[in-house]
Length: 87
Image 1 (tube, one colour):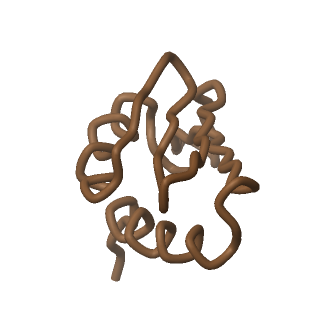
Image 2 (image 1 turned 180 degrees about the vertical axis):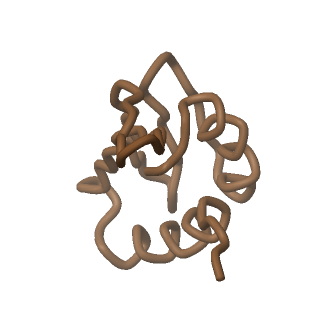
């Protein structure tokens, strides 16, 4: 995702406002329909294009315990908070 770690974590409470969650270091445990979804943050990196430096952070979702339909519902809300405008 095209964010620094600080930016990602600043947005997280709003993105998860309907879901109970805990965070320990790079692991975020979210309760969805009474089951756990795990979000794991990788190491912050920078993508360089000529003189432009764009931060990004790998984000992995493990939704194997909750299934596809609840994950898609979760992801629709989550994605709304992490979209960046353009035009």
